[in-house]
View 1 (cartoon, rainbow, N blue to C red):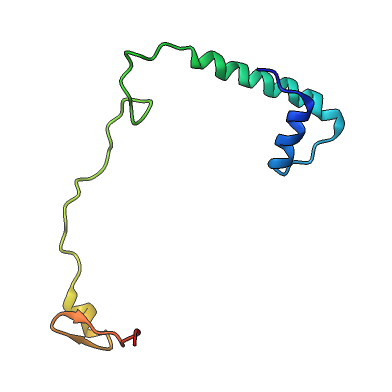
View 2 (spheres, rainbow, N blue to C red):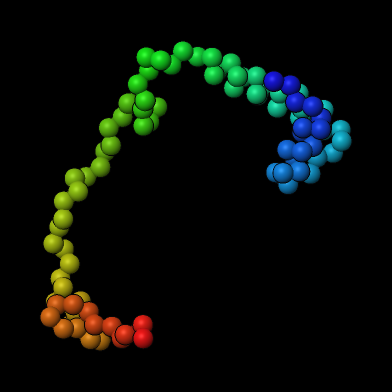
Length: 95
């Protein structure tokens, strides 16, 4: 795909880029070559390729998601301004 200098000016305007007129022809050539590579990639045969969530076949090295009782509710509620029946009480904010 070949971009014209007018196409480059339009894209630069939409991207809010300030280009000198001397740069327009150079950018038209470079952007056209990038679009040619993308067009070439679109011709790759991907019919038998399974979709992947990540390009590398890695397993997540995360700890197991297990709840741990490390919070002492009584200690936190002892310093709270207002609690009742194990919950924090707050002022009403909606009339």
